[in-house]
Image 1 (cartoon, rainbow, N blue to C red):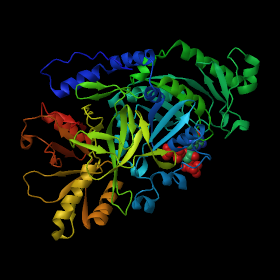
Image 2 (image 1 turned 90 degrees about the vertical axis):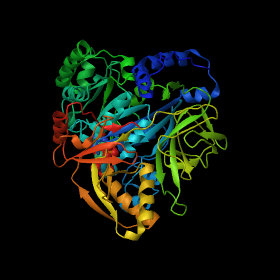
Image 3 (image 1 turned 60 degrees about the horizontal axis):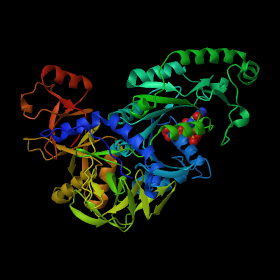
Image 4 (image 1 turned 180 degrees about the vertical axis):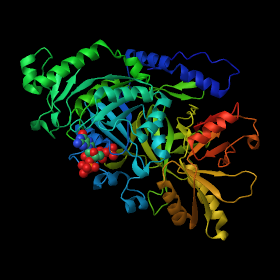
Length: 572
Ligand code: G4P
């Protein structure tokens, strides 16, 4: 099958960035055409495989129930036998990502992992986004590999800080976001309140797919708005894998009274009347463009509402989406293999000091031992020991398809964002943005003799994307300023410099909390009017950045310096 996509006319003379923006602006149209094309054409075996792929990330603030929901999803796919085996504190989850010594010592998972399972003909890839103190830039990068996101929200707490940060990245990519409001079996905020919060804070529409009937002690179940039936939550059903819906329309008064009681029936009838009469219309195109989030209420712990959620989710999401490469769109159904590196994990095997590059396949089929082309390195290569994570196990694989994530040994040749593809394809995927670090420290070596090892080590670790490094221009100060998204990365840096490069470091915490890239080309930074605690630094590519101690100082800089343009992430 060849899918012909009518691309927007990109005029000659436009810069790469302008072309890219034009493509992004028209992305909705491209997706629509793409979807029609997918429906119309007969498919090859490879394309049938691609069509059944769904690749998504689960995002949440710690403790909202991401792990519990993931575990239940895996149960449906038969990927795990026992509830509890994905749990962070239990052993099984560590088996997934227990690669770094430090990880074992701390008993936490530093890296994001991927889990694949089958469900009713679909092949599902779940990307885990680490939270707690192991929150890092990797968490953000993982979202670059997903085609949609499931946002888990604690019904008592609503939107929390980490959800906010992760949502921003999803919104930047316009990927569809599905909301699962969890823990309805506990006291919860009003569902109207929660939806209003989502709309106001995130600027998206919401559409409740189901509606909760009571909460906490009084939680009776949910009303499915499409099927117009009630999924009852009873003691009897608690903890069971599959809960059968009790068919019962709102008109069936006696049965309803029996199921949920007269008081809740009155509330439910009013609520549904209100929802049907007002609010957003459901529009699948709006969902796919990331402007409307379907909302589901449930309780992951009790496995309540998880399967209906999974079923609707699979129906609404699309196979792997087209990706932008230069001023072209790469069709995922193109039979030729292409992929990009979104994460590099170092030192998984201590004996070999090796690295694993994680790639998201964007098009076609990957075949083990076949020769591919590393675009940025300009070289042909065979990918060694390609691995895939199937729930808890890492397995060497012979083939994989667009939408899948594979890990390959990296002898130190790959960088984040690199493209690997079929020879002659010449794909070059959009770079992965550099996300603003939130913690900073001045770092110097203890032993002044170890300058070379220190510089090599810190540079390599920065190139892998685990940390960002900056220096103060024109000051002659040797201290390297290290910025990280999650504080644990400082420990990772210290540990790796010591074990891999034999360098001990001294770390001096810095008070900066906000960093911004300066987007003005010809501006003398020294002429800017800034608060005295603002620091000017450059990254290793020579880009200018400002480090601020608070958002207030950012606003001051913008107010006092007309024309100053500051960006939250860097696209190069
Ligand atoms: P996270 O990955 O987002 O950090 O959250 P996780 O699934 O680990 O869940 C955090 C806590 O919330 C866990 O309790 C979990 O059992 C509980 N939880 C998850 N979903 C629900 C739900 O639907 N209802 C209720 N009542 N609780 C839920 P914990 O006590 O921290 O851990 P554990 O001792 O249960 O393992």
